[in-house]
Image (cartoon, rainbow, N blue to C red; front, side, top):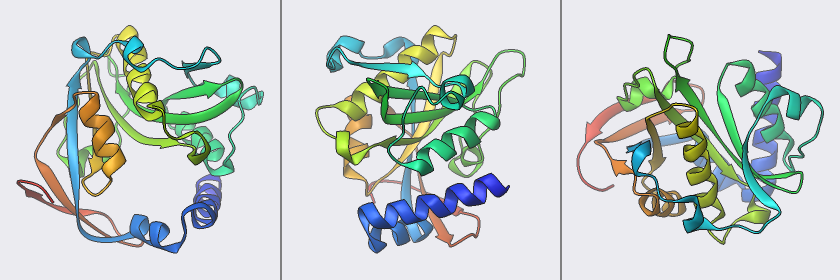
Amino acid sequence: MLQYCKMRLVQAREMLLVAGWRTLLRDIVYLNRVAVPVEIPLDSLRPVTDFTRPPDEAVLELSAELLGERRLVYRFRSRYLKALTYLGKGYRGFALVKGNTVAGDIWCADHRQGGRGCNHPDERWLGIECRPGEAYTFDMFVDPAHRGGNLAAALQNGALHLLKKRGITKAYGFFWADNVPALWVHRTLRWRELQRVRATRLLLSRKLHVTCHGAA
């Protein structure tokens, strides 16, 4: 709990410095914000070569060993602390690494065969039901210093290919309808949009939802 609180405080401070008060407040207080749940069968992924990156970049799976030995560098301390928290909860993480610098990462709750996976709280309010062998992806972040040039699409597509290699057959996720870059990435990768959800959040209160149809 202490590590989680520390991570949230560091995250708020870094978001404020990078994006300003408006972005910070939008993430912690919103009313009837439209979320777009999505799904994609992993046998229909676009080839990795569709999003070619420079030779010094690669998508790899994160581990406690890699982070504990500081063999990978996060420019934002909050993302490093968040990665440690997520790994401690049993989530899987994938990063697009440039040299030894993490340019972006994405996380998933892996519902593995045999009941060894873990759920994510977003699944319930989004109305997503992952079965064994499926995964819920969440919290993709790309360092502002590395944005552009299809890096977000390369990260997400590369992570999905790695999940497929590990036996996952289908992935779910969501993006906010007012997040235009996220909408572009998901549509570029051919995710299928599901029934939209309106969410309300007031500081630390739990998200509430009602289903909705059509665009925001």
